[in-house]
Image 1: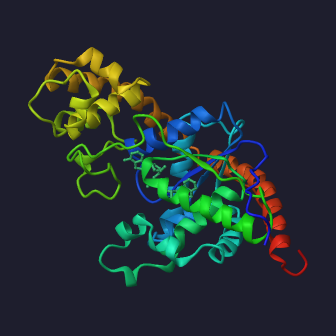
Image 2 (image 1 turned 120 degrees about the vertical axis):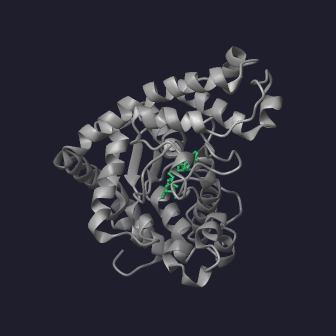
Image 3 (image 1 turned 90 degrees about the horizontal axis):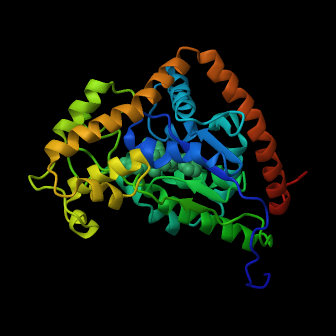
Length: 344
Ligand code: AMP
Ligand code: TRP
C-alpha cells in the first residue's frame, strides 16, 4: 500500500466524448452534446468518437450499423467539428478500448455497477435477458475516457453517474497499482440550458430517441415544416410566460421551451424571459419555430451533403482512428506494465 495522499494528474487537458450510432439524433443530442464538441475543439485538444461498441449492447442490424456510424460522423461534421482540429473516429477501429475495458472490469466493483440508473432504465422488467455488455457498459465508457487521459467530458445530464463511476475507477486503479496521478479524474461538462432537453409532449420526460411518439422530439433530419409543426403542437399551459425563473420552474413544459430557445440562441433563460415575459405561447411558439428552423436547417442540409459522399466520411474516420490509436496504444502499454502482464 502507498500512502493515502492523492497525487493529482499533471498532464495536459483533453476533451473526449461520443454518441452511440443507435437511432436518429434529436435536438437533445445536438444541444446537450454536439454543439459543445464544436465549441470545445477551439480551446482544448479534442477527441470525439462514434460509440459503435456501446451500440451493440442492444441488438443492431449488422447491415445497417456501419451506415449509422457514418450518420453520426456526418452529424458531427455538420455541427462544426473540424477533422483538422478534432480527432474523429469510430470506437471499434481502436480495439485498445476493449482491452482497457477488460482490465477496468477487474477494477470496478459489482456494487458500483449495481447503482447505475441507466442500466435499470434500459433493462426494464427483464434484466436477466439483457446482454452482459449492457450491464458493464459504463466500464467501457470509463475506458473510452481514460485511455486518452481525458480531463473534460461534454455530455448531457443523463451521463453524470457514468462520469462518477469513471472517476472511481481512475482513483482505484491509481491506488491499487501504485500509480498516483496516472489517470486524471475527468470532469463532466454539463452546464447550460441544453443539458437536459425534455420531450415536447411531456415536460417531465427526457427528449429521447426511444420515445414512441415522433412528436415528442425534433430530429436533426426534420425539415422546416416538421420542426414548425412539432413546436406548434408542443404541450404547454394557457398562461403567459412569467418574469422570473422561479415561476418558470413550476411549469415544466414552458420551462423546456424557454430552455430550448435559450440554448439555440446562445442566451440564458433569464434573457429569454426578459424579452417574452407577459406574452402567451401564441407569440412565443412561432418565434421559437423560426429560431429552431434557422438554427437546424443548415445542420441538416450539411449532414445530407456529407452523407452524399460516404468515401470522404470514411477517409476522415480512418485518419482519426490512426491518430487515436497512437495515444490509446501508449496508454494500454503503460497499463499492462503496471498490471504486471507478461512481456509488457
Ligand atoms: P444518446 O443519444 O443517449 O447516446 O446521447 C448522446 C449524447 O446526447 C449524450 O451526451 C447525452 O447526454 C446527450 N443527450 C441525450 N438526450 C439528451 C437530452 N434530452 N437533453 C440533453 N442531452 C441529451
Ligand atoms: N454513454 C454515452 C451515451 O449514451 C455514450 C458514450 C460512450 C460516451 N462512451 C462515452 C460519452 C465516453 C462520453 C464519453 O450517450
